[in-house]
Structures are given as structure tokens and as C-alpha cells.
Length: 176
Image 1 (tube, one colour):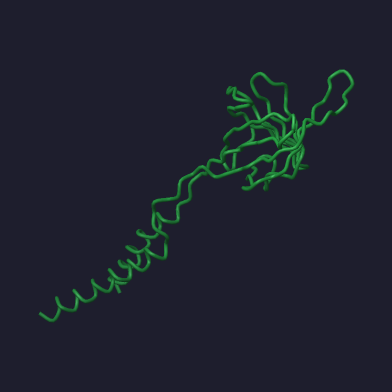
Image 2 (cartoon, one colour; image 1 turned 90 degrees about the horizontal axis):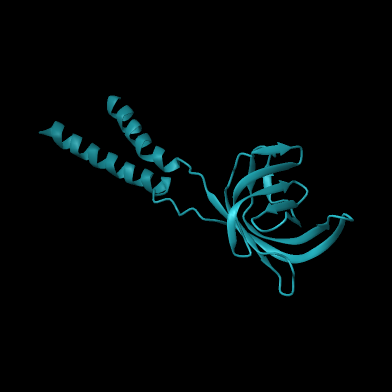
């Protein structure tokens, strides 16, 4: 009985670390379509960030933003109606409209991976007239490298092999 308990504990110690998750970092890259006057930009965020400001249907995050080749401190605002606004160095706010890019709550969102069609819109300050800047593709990719830890089924197979070898050694020890 004691041998079985020790074996299960040993197996749990081997499999446990393989099941630990890590935070992913996502790269957001917007590329304007050919002929579009939209601005290009890129930034990185954790897959599930904590918003610095959130209200119903809207949240804001601070991050370094690269817009048209210039990098600096900026921010990103997301709305669950497909609204995305970039605050970038040397640019006024860059508002975009497209699909909703996250799941979860506004205070604790989780971003979706893939390519999304967005259209830049510009608000003329004097008249509040929206002038389209043009369409483009937002590509959200996972920058995290694959975990070097083997998958759990491999560890279970290895652990059962070790248990078999320990059982054979135990039989030999008690026969002698």
C-alpha cells in the first residue's frame, strides 16, 4: 500500500509541472490595404491584460505603439462593438471599426487570435464628420514560444515505465 501511495505521489510530481500554464504575449499588426490612406501600426499586449480603465462596453490599455515607423508611449482602447482606437506618437487618435477582438469582461478581456478586417475612420474636429481613412487587416499573433515541457501523456507513459522497472527490481530484491 505504501509503495502505491509513493508511486502516485511521484507520478503527480512528474505530471504537475507540465500542466502549469504561462501568460502569452500577443503581437497586433495593422497593415493598410493597397490604395488605403489608413495608418499602419503595431503593438504588443498580454493575451489577458488588466485594463487601466474600463466602463461598460469599453476598456483602455497603456502600451508602446509603433505607428508609421515611429515608436513611443501610447495606448489602445477597445470596445465590444468592434471599436479600436490607437494613441500613437506623432498621431492624433487613430479610430478603427471592425469585429470585436476579445472575449471575457471589459475589466479582464482575453484577445482572439487571427486576421480581422478593420476600417480606419477619422473625425474632423470642427464638424465631427467621419472621413474614412481606409480598410486594412489587423493580424493578432502569439509571440510566446512553445513550452519545452513534454506533453502530459508522454510523462504518464514514462512514469508507468519507471513503475514497472521499480516493481521488477522489488521482486528481485525479495526473492534473494
